[in-house]
Length: 217
Image (cartoon, rainbow, N blue to C red; front, side, top):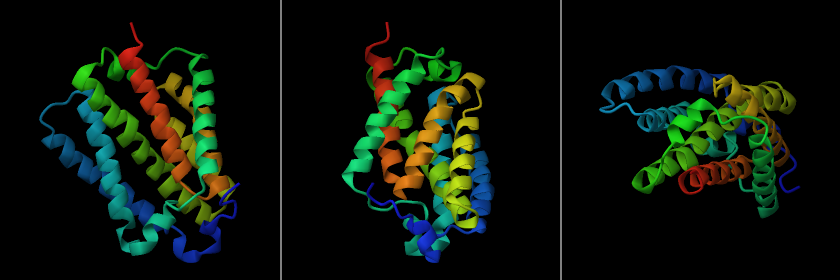
């Protein structure tokens, strides 16, 4: 597969130091407290949008000292089209199978229930693009990058996949998301790039939002 050798291990300048993770853990909550305090309207969608925007800002602050090495350290490296196609197809199939195994998580139902028109576009922007980008950069960018550089790709794969699932908090949601977490983690490991998982995650979430908006009774 394209990009099989992992440049994270081959180049020390592309490793994420522990202080980057610590900076994120400090900066994100502080920014979040201010952002939520200033939030004029606390709807489910606005809270989610603020949450993921804060995560992205925290990531930016955490890797800013790395300068031009920051994108590569996060896994934002070029990759061939084949891994991206594999990621999208595999994610679509796995997501469909998993969706047949259990009920829709309550949190997802509350956010997507009755979306249409402008609200559908807003939900798509938040859940289809902002959320996947933030989640991938946090779990398979920052967390995976630090663990792989500090210990190994196997440790990074296991811990980041489990952390991704647990972060969804609702027990049903955790169980349904866990297979996708392992799939995304495997893609990150095998390709050495975050791009396949970002694209696949965005398309998967966008399909789910579109189905809720146009196919739900």
